Image 1: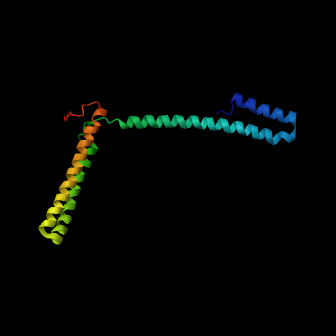
Image 2: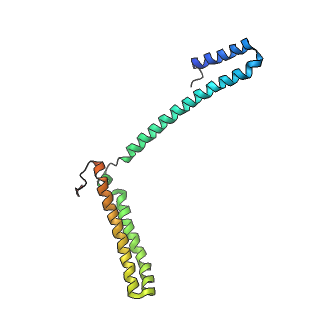
Image 3: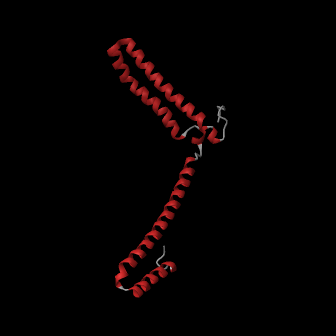
Length: 148
């Protein structure tokens, strides 16, 4: 909305002329009417701007969702850290867990602790495997094809 908008100038001029014709007793009604028109114009401008920015952000989000480079093939990149970082963390945590389990429940406790550690790592690995297979159709690949 530009200050030099001809339609806005016409509305304002008409409001001033109506005030001159009708007198001061209608001044507040005329001002309220003009302000209502201004509110509608401002609302429509804001709505247009919000729609435009929303469309731009959705477009940017959609473009950012497309993975390009080594990460799109399931190798390297940030996935390496997520996959092997979890394994390294679980092995580090296995040391105190093993000590506590062996101290409290001897060999049976140690076996239960290590079965749990192996199970958690296996579940994590299978989660990545199933995630890779479910993402394959979106990348235009055959979901039963294992090689990239």
